[in-house]
Image (cartoon, rainbow, N blue to C red; front, side, top):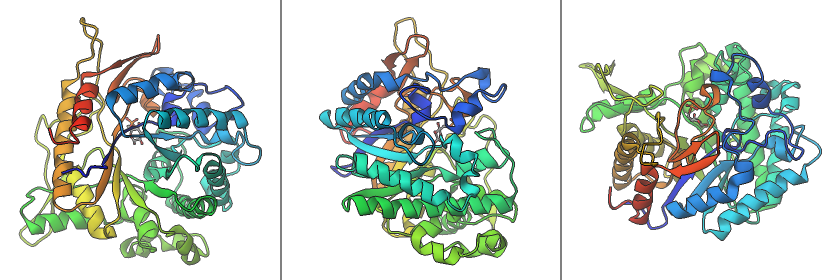
Length: 453
Ligand code: BG6
């Protein structure tokens, strides 16, 4: 059963929907410049215009209202607020987010603001980005400015979206901006600075307003038991979920390396044995800052891996069968992952409130002859995941909200506009929005507070 105040929401990110990339004093981010590099993004797509939400945000809020959303998770483009990443503030950027926030509140929709969803200021990239020991202070300054500007009305903030992804895909040989290929020494240092930036930002924001609810939205590789009745399978899945790395750069996608310091105030022991030598000097003292108490734990959860215990309790992989369900971008459909992610998060980190800050699927949706967008696969996907989520809550998981990814079809990073994740279709040539069948389905779920699942 979902609580009466359960936050049914949808999520987006600035670079993926806003457009207006060069307007009103906004500075360049690494995604602006990366998209200008030939061959980096499929079909040479860019976020220059995207869904044009920079100009059409009122229409988007009207759609949210129509769907009955209780919460909207969006991100702030750091370079709209601080074009150079630090220093002079761009009032027009503040004005834009103020207008969006006011429009949301006027329509009864609670804003959940992510401070950083990957569009890192280009000028700070030239200074070494997260490798620079000053980078946590740059971020804390930006966080403080956002708290001052918006914290009278925005009460829910998220510091980082998926650090695993922007470090892993951005600096560990992946296809995301700036697409560098660092070694584990640099990656561990960057990760540490990102978590220190999180802690410093939490402190800075709380100095401005003491009633903010602040969280963090990581992702990671989650494992679930093949047989949910078997304690041995459950334990194997739990242990695998929180294992940290094999000595290479695989720490990057783990859950514990990125969450233990923040929620437990220490790095995981197994990871430390391998990576301690790469941590910057004074890392032990930093942990006090990194582990500032936060109010909720976000989780971006799309899928997981099934495992089971062998005869001697050892981990065995559950092979996916031929034709195993997958989404339009080939991600496996594994609804049980959301249940075990919730239960395992509470098992390791206590009863901290959890928000699923992203979950959803890519499709190849089209406008049918009847002018509508029929996406039965997405309805089925969301239905399965939400049923599992409901079970997790019944089993005691402290889940307070769910943000479907994404409200709108949008610029899906290196895949450009190929994959459509929205519950609202965006016709890019015209910018027109059409609520998909899944959007109407989600509206009914919200109206019944999940009782119709
Ligand atoms: C998450 C991100 O990793 O997954 C989103 O936080 C992203 O920004 C979503 O859009 C889907 O991933 P992708 O790689 O298909 O864009």
